[in-house]
Amino acid sequence: MILVFGGTTEGRKAVEVLEEAGTAYYYSTKTGEQDVATNHGIRLDGALDGEAMTACCREHQIRLMVDAAHPFASRLHKTIADVARALTIPVVRYERIYPPRNPEYTWIDDYAEVPADVRSLLATTGVQSIGKLKYLEARGVRVVYRILNRESSIRLAHEQGATDDQLCYYEDGSAIDVEAKAILLKESGLSGGFEQKVKAAQARGMRIVVLRRPELHFEHTVDGPYGLRRTVERLLPEFYALHSGLTTGTCATAAAIAATLRLTRGVTPDEVPVILPDGETIMVAVGYGEGYACCTKEAGDDPDVTDGLEIRAAVEPAEQLEIRGGDGVGRFTLPGFDYPPGEAAINKGPRQMMRDNISEQVRITISVPGGEETARKTFNPRLGIEGGISIIGVSGIVKPFSEEAFIQSIRKCMEVARASGSQRVVINSGAKSERYVRSRYPSLPRQAFVEYGNYIGETLAMADELHFAHVTLGVMLGKAVKLAEGHLDTHSRRATMNKRFISEMLAEAGCSISQDYTLARELWQAIPKNKIEDFVHVVLHHCLQHCQPLVPQAELTILLIDDDGTIHSL
Image 1 (cartoon, rainbow, N blue to C red):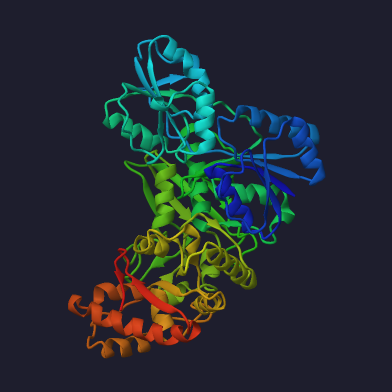
Image 2 (image 1 turned 135 degrees about the vertical axis):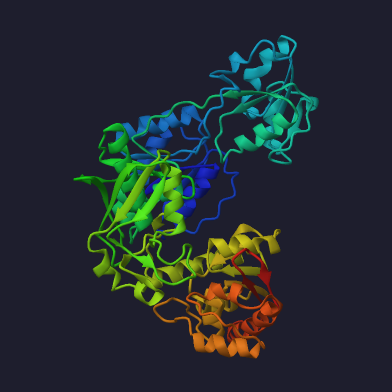
């Protein structure tokens, strides 16, 4: 069993990661005031001292703890470390991502170190810090305390001697409407809104005084959801039925980092830090050969023919960072991809990962022994990618799901959406389409947005079973042309793009195109601008014809999203 200490943004993210397992765990907060939606998490509310925490771990047979508490909760961090050491329970620290420390700010290690020349101060360090700052008032400093606008916080502020005219509230997370010459902040990281608060203060010409975060020392530290999942999989393998893996893009990036370190610093570490597209950092195992570094493709429990391939990177000095494809890496032979024909099939995401991770001016050549043979077992030949595999990956991590497990996860999300009280559910194929559609429904709760992956029919049937009055389906063109033909499961194993059917829809819309295309998204550029809306209406009418019968009692809205985020509807 896992015990999570939360009450923070990181605690909420930890819940999302653990919920993917469908396995019970415990979630502990001091006040119980955080609103966290869980299906499998068991809430434990109230502060735990060492004795109580030890008893809790024994009673619930805790085998792993996740410390996702606030970075300044020093007493709790120490208690967790002491109890874990006594009971030999591993701890994963879910840390925040912190921007570099700006030397132009005034950095302090204790509340007593606020500079003597500060005459007026806005303190945003929390209600618990009011008593520690009262000494400033004694020396004539005007202090205003910004706290949460809730009864318990206001009461605690009064107990520490703050008056009503000294209090202001977090009505807007970053706006500042207090007259003060300086602001006192905690080094709270990106998720704590640190940069937004600093920016707002600088706009008012305020001096920035920052309380450094305490240094925490845990054996296992992560700073994002993927790192947490992979660490849990390693420390408590049975918690997840299926384990995650790494994309070819992450493996290529890790190999490139290792090769660059050997070239520029003469070091050959067994693992290297890789910054993923979401900003978090994970450690990836690497190896070395004559003139190259390598990383073994790890698919986890996701069925993938590239599992076990060795992805190599060779680097040499250059005038700027260059990325090339070598043996075993395919090449684009048709238009419609991120790069023109003739370019190595290293997609935009992995290329950007390498740029984000490597600052040296080197030429990187990625190669994959056995890549050409493996590629014959993929869709690459059909897509016009020849000579090897593609180096791909949007998130950097492969999250495995059996079909049954994935559909069940959708059902759980739909049930949570219904439990949120929303009369509308908005289903999307993934994070990209959801990001665009959210602007249409800014007042809906986060739980009302659900990803269907490829299982459109299954998800619509769930919406009908749960009696949603309004259903919105967000879809991009690649899936829409399959859905329009009646494919309610758009996975490439079951449905492929039918050019003949697309031609029929183009004719129905009164337009034609002269150029050939490989991917559906190329149609946005191929169709004359004055005929786009006609084509869109034909596609949406066909989609509606197949989808409406699945939600006969609901108002169904289908939104077609183009590549730049423009939303089309009937």
